[in-house]
Image (cartoon, rainbow, N blue to C red; front, side, top):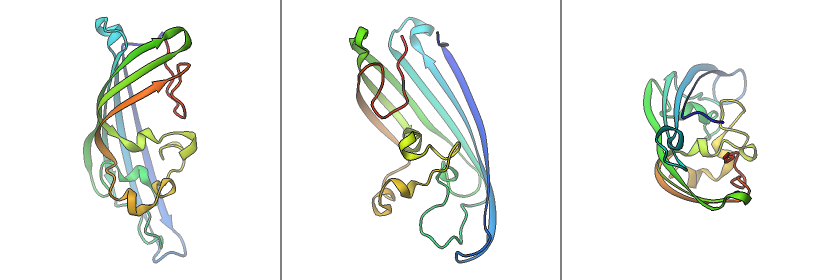
Length: 176
């Protein structure tokens, strides 16, 4: 049985350098601290199938590693919420309502509205994770000419069909 409110936090530090090759040698230290609050309103207030998430991130330290000889950022996790210095942002604040279609078969429709960190949504095996537990470079998922125009943190409305309690291709598992 899950909890009504869950607080999760992490601190990830990066020290990266170019020892040889590239356009220059050097190194940079930067880090990201994250705190996420998840709310289950069914347990909090009796509102079955309602949840919410709020996530804050603080990025600090030096700039992204330069001098690698590439136009791609070498560390996507160090870009959010900013690519240099100390930056703080609420990168997610959303609410989700599940609409049961057939609970015995795990069929539901989810409607979610709010602010999202799109890199968190890509934290899947296919994309090699979000960068804090495994290597992740945003250039691997699409052409930079398109990705430069997509905000990493955005407001959105999502409508998802869930089969068998699982969203296809996503690690989200619905537990009753």
